[in-house]
Each structure stands twice: as C-alpha cells, then as structure tokens.
Image (cartoon, rainbow, N blue to C red; front, side, top):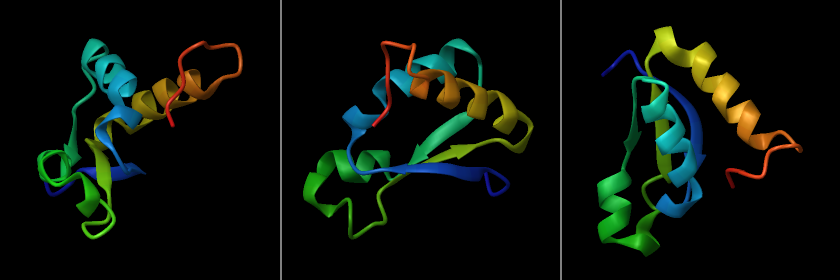
Length: 80
C-alpha cells in the first residue's frame, strides 16, 4: 500500500460515500486512510489531516474519470 497515491482529502465520511460505491463498482483499488479513526473521533479529522483517498497507481486514470463524472454539472450525484 506504500505505492498508493493520494487523490483527494475529505473531512467526514459522508462526503465520499457515493464515490466509494462507484469505485467498488468499477473495481478501482483504493482505500481511505484515517477513515476508521475519524469515524471514531469525528472532531479529530483536522488533527489527522482528514480522510485521504488513496488509489493504486494503475487505477488513477479510471479513478479521476469517476471523480470527474460525479462533478459534471449534468450528473445528479456530486461529491463534496
């Protein structure tokens, strides 16, 4: 997991829930660093640098496509 790259940072888990489902559906290898820690201590997100979306280097292009499709104005689903 040391080769994974950070693509985005979130403050709270609800901000990326749809994105997580889309990544799992597309079989994008990823994990959210600090997800459990912030889930247990919600007000500590800033102290730990937020929740980082870490993506495998081979899946970065596909991950960016999914993020862009969710941020497209024609999409009714958006990530924060």
